Image 1 (spheres, rainbow, N blue to C red):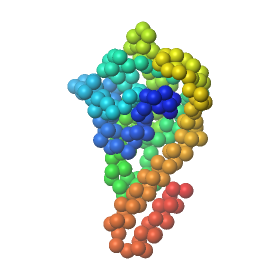
Image 2: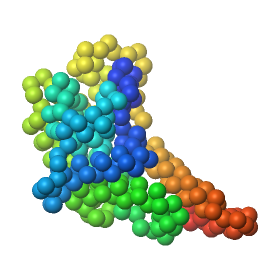
Image 3: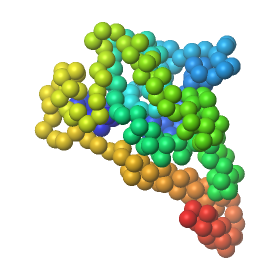
Image 4: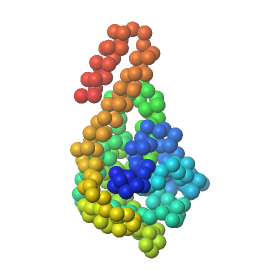
Length: 244
């Protein structure tokens, strides 16, 4: 949907990938999700227009997690906004989500611990990311996240439908192409195919790339602090073995 909206002239469009390396934004989003979902949310300030302007004010449209979990709050902050709720079969969504997004948080392998130790910034990024998933899914492991994600999916759709004003919401069925989207937004139908960029294979490739990048950043930071070239080579070979 991000690519489709950009083709229709609504760019820039934010997506979860836009904040993955921004630790301060990740931590801020985590605080907002805790204020909405956590058992200890009493006393936490819910997000409103001021916070959303800070996070997404430079974008014309918002898609994907983690911002989708603020659906009703974003709708209250920007009442003039149009809302697109992408519908898909919950069974196929679950299989896809389980094998992609649910593999991202709560990783405690030797490789992950080594990377976090070598580069505390990456450890901080992962901690902030885990905090977001923990708040939304009431989970502290990948297994708990998988067990809870279908209930979170259903609740999300209920929240959006309840919060939407008449005429504000398009319930877009995945695979419907350009016509319903363009009719809702008042845009001409483009003469190019509707984009499809986030299939499982593509997503898994992105995850692998991110993890490799994290490992390489940790290696670079370690190498800067090592005086001996031999030590650098040995360490890099060890880390490459861990990545296999």
